[in-house]
Length: 467
Image 1 (tube, helix red, strand yellow):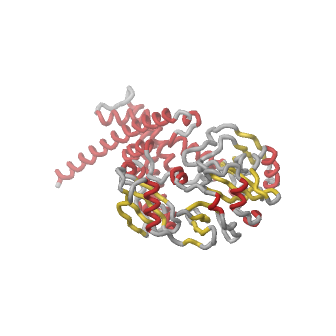
Image 2 (cartoon, helix red, strand yellow):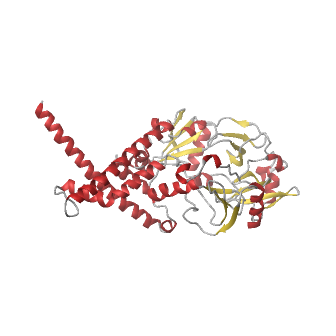
Image 3 (cartoon, one colour):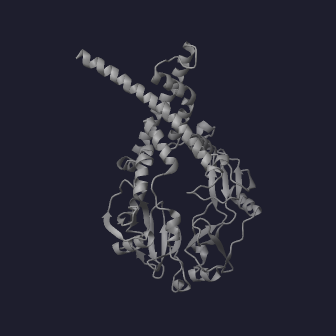
């Protein structure tokens, strides 16, 4: 088990589980033209969830997301629901996205090894399109949304077989049974923690009995004792952090009384009644830059309407709002704006607000989750010592931390991936350290595995002789 985890962990440093790039999918969206906004209606108040306007098959559509993957698509002109997309749409989308013709299409109503998450079920059925490119790409298109939901190629699939799948135990049937999968991780990690703790203890006991660094003369015994003595603590923290990755830390461990905890909310649900039936045409007319618009989102912030316009960066939109019925650019929120809003929300809780100019060990962006470099940090004096980070451009909370999540950050992200601000500035150094420590962890594991094989072989030979 340890050998597999360390080998697959080294692979994971370079390649994770295959996924369809958010950036590539976004940049594949068609750019709006002025004529596209003719006859588009404003989203009605009956739309519940996150709302965005995009082009699909050359038509303007509203995408209304009410869950992690739950989504409905509507024609932006008629507001009629689009319940399904054809196979022709799927093949056309794949060809334009990949640049090669589709070799084979399979329609499937089941999740497979490359979509092993139960929250993908609302997107079924999929058009599974095998491309004729040299990379042997397979694209998954949701019949319900008409969007690309997964992309794999031969290299990524083989990397996952040696990396993500054995490391995270991402076997389809087990992963789809989320609670069972989590229980398996907990049990295996707990056994691993027990092995490390007893091994480290036994190593010190053996050391005290004889002079020298190791009391052993035989090769496998000696090197298992030496590698375990010097690097067993790393193996222990690695397995412990793996356990923390799938569990929550109890409040009592951080000195928080669960009964004293309060719900800390900042972001608001979208309230379309405040948008005054503003037409997308009005939004487009008010834009400072009209070329290159790929998506528009509707938001409500501080009880005021907001429109977010995306161009070439799927993470950084231009922000607009309404004033006297007119669409205008949203001014950057000041420190005083955030303080005033905090006073309204946290009436009975003491707080402080500061401006954070740079990333640190608690606040930093990643390839998957964008965070603006500058943010307003609200520190609450509640039972959980909550920290909120507010985006100055939009006024929305982009991150929330508590005593619990801050401890979890160290137990998991630091011990498992060496996630430190100083190391993330030099990712090559961070990866080098991870590889070297994984190799010594692998040495501990291989020597232990060889001792196990020898023990089984000896006892098997004794047993066969008796028979």
